Every structure is written in C-alpha cells, then in structure tokens.
Length: 259
Image 1 (cartoon, rainbow, N blue to C red):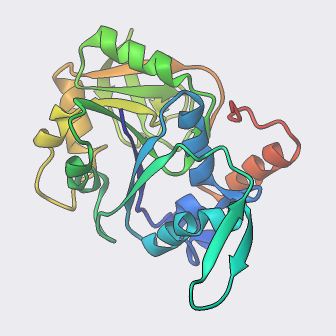
Image 2: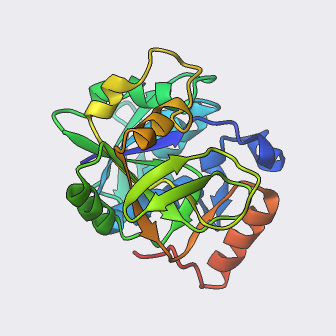
C-alpha cells in the first residue's frame, strides 16, 4: 500500500513560516515535519510515498532531489568525466517517493483524484496530512479498516478545540461536522485507510474539500469508519504548536518518534 500525503496547502495560520516555504517543510529539529510523518509510516513498513504537491512544491522536490547531498559525506572527481561518490548510508535508502504536482490552488479532494495514476494496482491506499504527527499504530488502523468493510477509515484523535468534531458510534462515524464551535470528543486526525474506489466518487472539481462533501456523504451513508487513537497526536497549525513540537523533539521527549 502506498502512502499518500497531502502537501499542497498554504498554511495561512502559520504565516510566520509558510510565507517562505510550504507547511510540510517547516522543521522539527533539523528535519521538515514531512520527514517525521514519513518516518512514522516507514517504521511500520510502509515506504512507498506519493506526495501531493501544490504551494511552493518546488521546495519539496529540491529537498528530496538533494537528499544524498544533505545526508551523506561526498567525494567529487572533477574533470571531463566527473563523478560523485557518497559515503555512509541513511535509513531512508528503501523509500520510493513520487512527487506529484496537483495544482497550487487545488483543494484536498482534487489532489487525491489527481494521483490515482500513481497507485499502480493497489486496491487501497493510506492517506494523511502533511502537518500532523502522532504515535499512531498504523497496522492497527489497517486492521480496523479490514474489520469494518468501510470505504474509508480515519484515525479519530482528541483535539485542540478548534477542529471539527466527529460523532462516533463504536467504530462507525455517525456524523462529520467540519468545524463546530464546541470542544472535546474526537476529530479527524488523518492517518486514514481508503479504498481505491473512493477516488472514483470524488468530483471533477478542484474547489471541493475531501472533508466537506465526500467525507460527510460517507458518514451519512454509513461508509466512514474510525480508529480511536487515545495516544499522542499534534498538528502544527500555529506558531505555538511549532514551538511545542520543537521543544518536545529537542528535549528527547517526542512521542511520535517510533523509529
């Protein structure tokens, strides 16, 4: 199964950082939050990634294009037959990464629809956002999805209060409200498992958010499942959250570091 990561948003609530780079490239420690998300999946054996690029996507392309230069020592032979030899190794050697331009202004449903051609023969895919980390047991989410028979299973997490609340009935999502004015309960924390058939249901409209019509419809039809995650989960949506995540990493207390 491939891991699809939504990397195209502008992150307007974190303008201190996103004015100069895409949100997934904002660092936690010396590495972008996108790298941390990918490391979580890789720790569970999922190492094939499809990145849905948009705003300042060239910076993400450049990061991975220069990954060996930034990760290893190198010896250069200059001349008519120049050569580069990289020394040592890094733990990401088995990753495969597809960098897909899905439009600078596109919304999430369109970004997912745009990468259908990169999923090969897979009948399902993993899906998450490029700005949130957690110690989510990915195999357990997949198992919950297998049991449920749903079209999509999301990871339900305890929120900061500003996000949209889910109404849960066991492992079934009974209601999907994007942003109510209440706190508590569970919200959609990403780390989803989706049947490939979901892509065929998404509209040919780049202005549609996955979290609006499509997921609300799945919930209403009883086709949206939930895996309850009561462990650590934290988005990087504000400068305060940026400082929180960096403080946890620098102190050696990052709960999402499962590798």
